[in-house]
Length: 168
Image: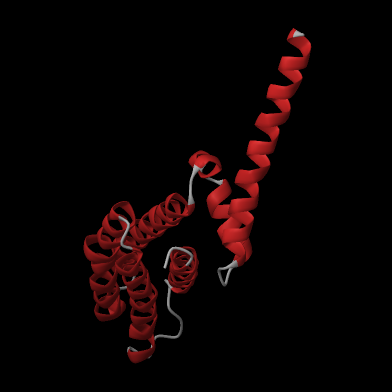
């Protein structure tokens, strides 16, 4: 009898895990960057037990981490490329807005169940990444040293928007 109960509990636990995987996969299919969505969510242990809003919070946190990395890169690049000061300052302002306004707005909105404001914050993040990248074009720089970070942040923000739209 004990073996039967153990087997049933094991099966139920496995089925619950499959349900969680299905939620992640279904949710990520509604984003423009499926693989990025999957890898970002699987990198967080809490994704297995999260609802859609929780998945959104995980990606918003990834956006925050990427923006913090961008700010660190800007600090280093200013030392190496004084000729790019204006474009880098433009990026600093853009990513400062991400960290001080957009991310907190999205977190608060998802936590309070107001996904429209979370969507707005993440749309703005994608825009800020474009603003940063565009500053190098205006400066006639050969190539933006932040292209990779800008692209990653833009795509993560698009993933966040895709997840959040499941809540609207």
